[in-house]
Amino acid sequence: MTAARYLTSFIFPVLTAIALWRGGAWGWVVPVVTFGLVPLLELVLPARPFRPGDDELAARTRSPWFDAALYGVALAHLGVVAGLLVGVSSGHVAGWDLPGAIVSVGVSCGAFGINLGHELGHRRSAGHRAAAIVLLATSLYAHFYVEHNRGHHTRVATEDDPASARRGETVFAFWWRSITTGAMSAWALEADRLRKRGVSAWSWRNQTLALWLGEAAALLVALVTFGPLATACWAASASFGVLLLETVNYIEHYGLVRDTRPDGRRDKVRPEHSWNADHPLGRLLLFELTLHSDHHASPHRAYPALRSFTEAPQLPTGYPGMMVLSMVPPLYFRVMDRALTRDAARRRAA
Figure 1: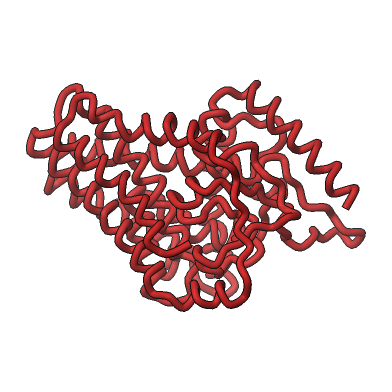
Figure 2 (figure 1 turned 90 degrees about the vertical axis):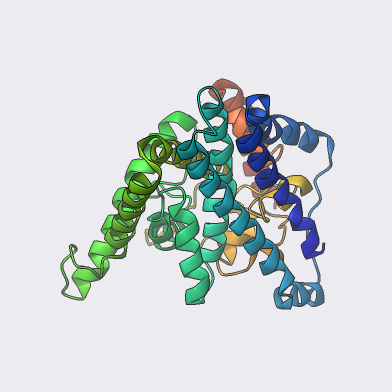
């Protein structure tokens, strides 16, 4: 798979730009494609596991074009957020066009602002991580950088993890729990780090506090520059993006639990502690986020080098379809609880 294929994701910034410019029915094309067309295609297109050889993995890791594709889409996302602010403040986007514009930009916030920020936040260089914080801030969710990297990856598939959904938990209950306890965890992680160094949690060294203050400053700048309506629309799009992220979190680890050892410690994180989706369209559009098992096995592995694992539990369909399914809890439980039972039987037989 070449880097150029990931440019398929550009269709969403393009459609969002058209929605902001044309309005009307165009304002709803992005959500229809995201939650209608893509899930239908993934039901038809066969899953395609990705298990490359060492030479191909090395080549993909060395190639600069994969990062070029990622940064290109990231810049396009920043453009549509700016387009929303300018469009609303100028009066070009107004009235009944506002809801469609908010949702369309919200899809971009979740799929590209947070998702690509998540990818870059795991990189080792300061430049990549700074870009991650900028992208996460477009959804006003920059504290995710602290909680996800230092909290979620340590506590995944345990009851202590805000971002791991429990069996029988609805997505709506999960939203509240994950958002609130995730924010508290981000604060606690930084407070504990600073306490060990003899520094107050209210210090300027508190990264979570600095991120929150930075987002507050960004909102203030937007308010002064673009006015209250445009700023409120951006905040609404950001909130929609956060709900998309948390729905993905809900799907990624639903019902999976790490075993406890005799000494009371949890098992090491393995591929079977994350749901995988090998469906090719979702893999392309979300920059391999759906190969989530390998991401947790190797958090610093860049997206083009993520692989499928035979031992990882497989989702019945791709992420967009599973997100739609999660909105109907009884149906979601029926499908996923059966999948959990099958996965448990497969692991016992292995």
